[in-house]
Image 1 (cartoon, chains in turn blue, brown):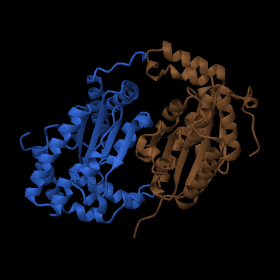
Image 2: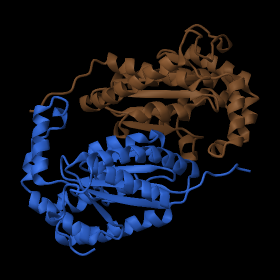
Image 3: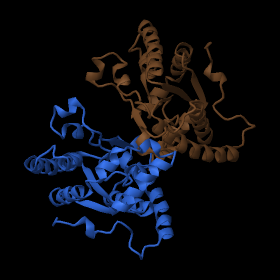
Image 4: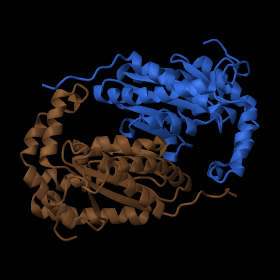
Length: 248
Length: 248
C-alpha cells in the first residue's frame, strides 16, 4: 500500500449516501449475519479474526455492541487487549496475541490488538523505529501464519474519526451519567498527541497491509456499523460454506 | 432440597400460560437485559455464571442463541465443556472449571459444566458413588468460593425435556440439512440410559443445591427462553447496580 494521508480521507459518509436507507440495509445484513455465523459454526472449517483499532472514543465498543450482538455468543468471542502484564512482557509481543487467535468455527474480535505494539508504544517512544520495523515484519508473518494454517480470514478495521468528533464524545462522557464510567482524564492528554498518532497509523497502514486494512469513516455510528457489517457479510459469503451432511 | 422426582415435574408450560403473551413479554425482557448487562459491565462489581445442563437435544445451544444474543458480546462469554483432555485429566476435576469462572463485569455461560463430572461419569460408572459424594461436596464448596470471593451470582438451569420430545428432536437432525451437523449416532445409544440419567440428575439436585437449581420445562422453546431470560433479569435487578460516577 502506498502511503496514505489520513487527513485526506473523509471521516463521514459521502453526501450521496442516505441515512435511513443505510440503516434499513443494516437491519437486513444483521439477519444475514446471524445465519452466516451459524453456518460458519456448523461447517467448522474456517474462522474469522476481526481487528478493531481506533483512537479513544472512535466507537470500538459501540460497534461491537451493535454489529456482533446479532450473532450467537457461542460462536463469537471478544478479547480486549489492555496494557500487558509483567508475565506478558516477559514474552515476545505476539505471545499473548497468538493465544487469542480464533479456533475453527469462531469469530474472534480484537478490541485493540497487536497493533498497539507499533502505535501507542511508538507515540510514547517506548519502542524505537528499528524495533518498530522488526515488529511490523513479525506482524505480517504472524498474520500469514494464522491465515494459512487455520483458515483464518483476518479483517482489519481502523475507525477513522475526526479530532473534533473525538473531543465532543470525550466531553459527553463527563456529562452523561450512563457514560461516566468510560471517562478517563488521561484521554484528553493522549489526544494532544493526535498528529503523532495519525503519523504512526499511516506508517502502520503502509507497512502492515499484506492483509489489507479498511479505513472506516466513523464520525457517524450508522455508517460505521454498516461498513463493518457489510464487509463481514461479504467475507462470509465469499467462503462458499455449506452445512455438512450426516456423519457416517 | 428434598429428593425430587423428575417424572412428576411437567416438561411443558402450564395450560393457563398464553404462548403469544409470553413471547411478547420475552421481547421486552431482552431489551431490559441489554441495558442491565451494560450496567453490570459499567459498574464492574459483580459477575454472573449461568450453568446450563440438560440431556442431548434439550436445547442448550438454542437457549444460548436466543436469550444471550440480545447482549453485548464484549460482556458475555460462552464456554462449552467437552470431554476432558489428557492435561485436564491430570488435574482435579474443578481445575479447568475454575479457570473459566467469570471475571467481574462478565456474564459467563457454561454449556455443560462441572456437573458432567457427577452425571455422565456416574451413568457410565467411570466414577463410583463414594467419589461422586466427594465431588458433590467439592462442587458446593467451589460454588461457595466464587460466590463469596468474586461477587459471582450463579444461576443453574436444568433443561427438562421429555423422552418423547428428545427422540423427536434427534430424529429431526437426520432429516433437516441445517441440523445434520449436530447429529451423532451415539446420542440414540445414550438415550437408552435415560432412566439412569434422570436418577443421577435427581441425586445431583438433592446434594448440590446450596445454590439452587431451576428446573426449566423445556419441551417448548418459547417457554424455556422466557423462564431463563426472566430469571436472569430478576437476578440482575436484585443487584441494585448503579452507573459509577466520574473517577477522580
